[in-house]
Image (tube, rainbow, N blue to C red; front, side):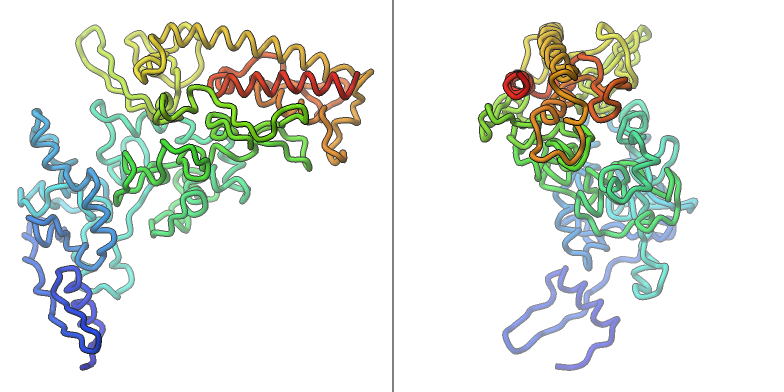
Length: 490
């Protein structure tokens, strides 16, 4: 076997992708990659397709795994989808081809925009990574690797912001006003390593999603969104730009009852059962609460420890997309002038507030101003009003149970403050019932004048979110908590 220098090996790797190398058991036959047509001068060093008919990108000749995955993604059919949409226009081309959108290109000419060459159709690797000519010419030279940025911000053209924005696709605008774009307690989460897997983009990608691919913000060189140069939960945390077997190019499915494999539950599943070493209540228990597993809440001894108690929201025969059915609900509305507004569901609000035209808005508002349409179009309820009335009824029921449990837990004649002290062995029913109370009650700032923080119960007002996620389970946890406390502290 003759020796090859590094550049020859690179050509061989490219040949593998082109099917030009044949391996035998004892002998290897090599053939140099035939190369690709030089890009037009107006392309701005963007390479595009190596073989247009088969959608083989120049990058894909070496990066074969990414090429194979990308070929199955919507990005790979962006041009055909536009042409078949019935409303193709030249103003749409930049987002359906390789262009200066999505990357850091500062060239006056780039890709399809200036060449109208078919080799630049579709959203290819260079749409996000930028021009690849320098990397192909000198792949080992530092700085030639076109590493993409994943920062997302309204009004910028890089990353997903370049195209998934505007009245037609206001993904970025809605996301930026959502909890994912802001991340509650972001300052604390960015500085606390225990919080970073769900409160920063870098932490979520590396730990929660298991992604090790390079991106510019991976080692915090830009510092554009938060303290310690942390990213918020940007698009690439949940979506794989290269492609995915899941709907919407999601990194994990949203229709599985396996908590560890459900995209939303990867983060919304942190402290769903009591921490016996802490007085803290539940923290992001939504995943197991919806699914109804027995790893949520405190199960009193008088309650079946293994039973899965779930409502219709956790039944995939009725609610196939689980959390996403209501929390990522797409809709459209029309104002008085006839202009249609689209909502992508990326406010992630199940029953959002709406403006005068019915367009979802961030923030809090009276229940009468909320849109419950998702409850009906999902097929679960006859109408939004029916769903709203059911919620009101159940909130009243849960609130009554909370009031009864609160009265028991606040009776210091029967349950001394010391009962709630951290470290009590064994873990007693008063502390367990308190956890269930906090799981079901609407969060509020309170100050327990008698027991301080150890007991510290907010007013007995049911949390509409917890109630909606799983009414039967919340009811059983509270009912059995009441019975157990009455039994243990007669």
